[in-house]
Image 1 (cartoon, helix red, strand yellow):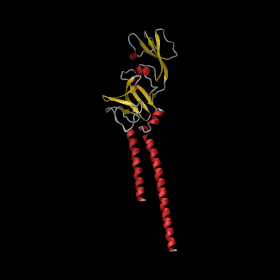
Image 2: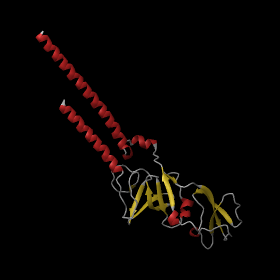
Image 3: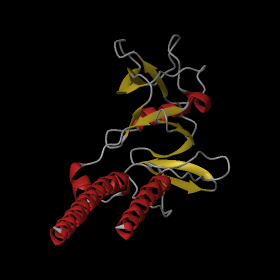
Image 4: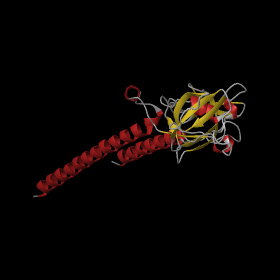
Length: 248
């Protein structure tokens, strides 16, 4: 009986260690350079070995101690910081033109959406410079054309053409610094159902699966222990009855 209990406790300790190991692996931080943000689940550095499978859209790139993330609709954006508590990733455009990002970035096929409240703005491409209150976007303009963000309800000036109306956090202002305000996104853990079904052992579900297996194991072992105890008690009772019959 003592050996059975020892084996049971030993197996429980092994399963507990496995759960702790997987959890630790998922949330063990790494960095790309000394000044880079802490990187852990759900993010991981591309081509770096991890004990959990990477999730689509959460792969980061590390080059020359710079952390970046790639968006197919735009390109690479620098990762300035990541807040895992608020699910807030702060990005910067290496070209230093956040409105170029707003104009082209398509988040519909990614796990991200804007952290800010959005409002519709229309981008205008004008052949002449507009007078105030219109404010030109310098990083999108050149000598022969001038771009502006305006309220979609405003009439389009004769020298301008609509480029696109998009929902963005804010219109251009010379008083808003791209390097400080930058581009903030938040994320949700969306995964295609078929991928989750066919890949149930992926890292994001390993702890849950181990937990379920651990619970089933404890239940089975408890039932075995109960059955063994009943058998021993029954055997002892039979032994006592046999002894009583011998002395009667």
